[in-house]
Length: 210
Image (cartoon, rainbow, N blue to C red; front, top):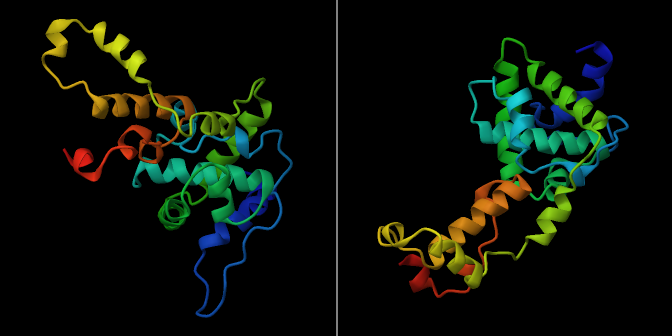
């Protein structure tokens, strides 16, 4: 990465740089650079192919942290603002964002090449800026916020399994919810832990524990 780009990204990486006691961290206030993509085009957990091309080779840290923080910083590159705001824009809980960002920034300082993550981040930003089509992940998240596979559709899917498979497993609402989470995760490219659970939420605590 050239000096100009490293300098441009520095305000993001300094968000969790240790400071003397009593000194507050200064949040990034302005976009790092002009981008074609916007926060709505960023998948909360990154598209699988984005991760595989740019970050999968990096070891020594859980992939979930890399994926979360890459999404957060892609957002900050485009629009600026603090980590918590970037997390909100990509549909991520603030606690997840703070914990993962702290972990990744500590990890980068211990790497043989501390700029490795920065380089990959800007390469992905370049890729998004040159992409002929950008997916609106915010629209997908909004559209599926309370979605689940409806009972009639689920029954049709179950019927296709045949009697031998149906007899080997319980295929009630818990499985319908699990299948709905899988679809939501694939469509929104988000973490399964963040998926809506409208089927289970409507059940009593006793039924949910069963």
